[in-house]
Image 1: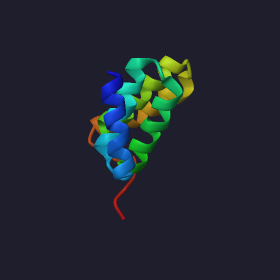
Image 2 (image 1 turned 90 degrees about the vertical axis):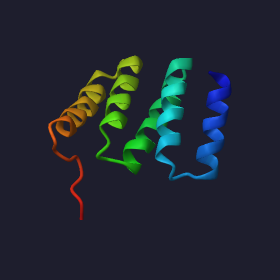
Image 3 (image 1 turned 135 degrees about the horizontal axis):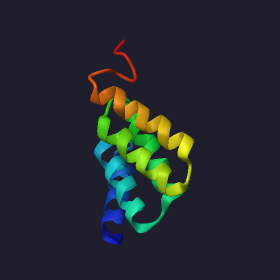
Length: 92
């Protein structure tokens, strides 16, 4: 898992707007127990794609692992909106 984390770090260093890299890095960090850093990556992922269901679901899981239930519920709420066909951020 540490090798994956290192490679994902390289990806986002090369392309800071690479959503898949941020999401994957966050999930890998979550698996290694680096919860706070995982949350930072999760926040970057939802910033890049605010209407991505998996990004909000992952961020909710990260907050649960951190014990931050209010933030976990908020992220889960956004995931629920998206799962029902809504949008968190409307297209301009």
